[in-house]
Length: 201
Image (cartoon, rainbow, N blue to C red):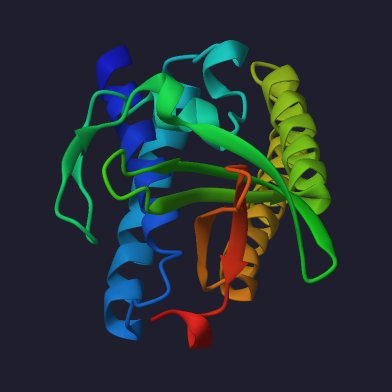
């Protein structure tokens, strides 16, 4: 059961990231969001039916989520180099773009150095994660009390907070729909800069 639950979580996190891609068409997104909803329902079923512990249901940041798919082989879509994502491959860089400060979570191709964005985490992102975590705690504390009225209210609140976080992730990806890339100055210092779609060759 635990392995099935773990696999469902991996699929859920992968879908949440995948549907935020900039080149998706509406038909594909509709199918993918429908699949994501079914996966989320399955995850919730396992959490409730098998009394999954607090440690297992807590909100993980994207770096923790990426650990779930470590050792996966990926192919760079720029240079076709195949490489394996390791835990140490997931990087975090503090950025300020368009007047907004955020943490860029990413990994990159070891051959051509193309950056692959995993997540953009600003102050609002962390606040939404914290709020969602608090509601999840309330749901866990209410479990087994047989207070169905409170349970229904909490489930609605949980769904609302969860949707708020998902929508914010999508909004941030839309806001920064370009690319992040490495730049090296004449002193050899390497920095990451954001490139708008119009400026990408």
